[in-house]
Length: 169
Image (cartoon, rainbow, N blue to C red; front, side, top):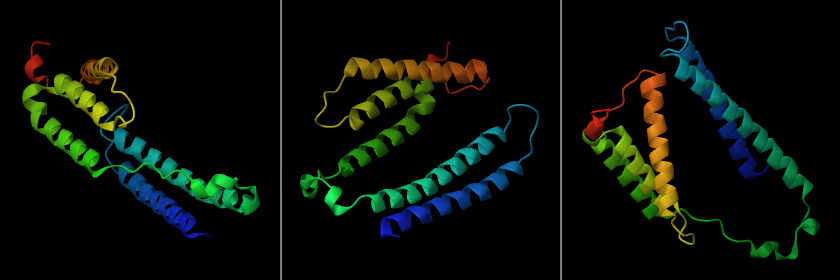
């Protein structure tokens, strides 16, 4: 087994082990009927288990795919593969700055406004340099997402998110 496949296998086993431990801890939480404080941890434990299994299947799938390919089957231009796109440190720093600003202003400005602003700016940060920034589309998605999330938590879950400047709602 090649080194990348070993790393993927180890990652899958570690994720599966962590998910089993998390599942045990999640089921120890006191539960009630319906949706309660234990619902989210149980769901997250299940999703983590699913990711661990998918990682394991991926590790074995890559092994079978690598064994099936022979050097004669590879195209002649395989030596000229495009380098994978590298995430610039500036992008990471901008994202961290946006998250810190979001956290600092969430209380005073409020969830609906700050979430819309954060999403809009994050879309711009994550837009590749060779693509055009679509301001109207980004703004529309950010505002709709923020409003849907706010109303979902307020009306469906009966949980109040900080309204901030929109306290009259």
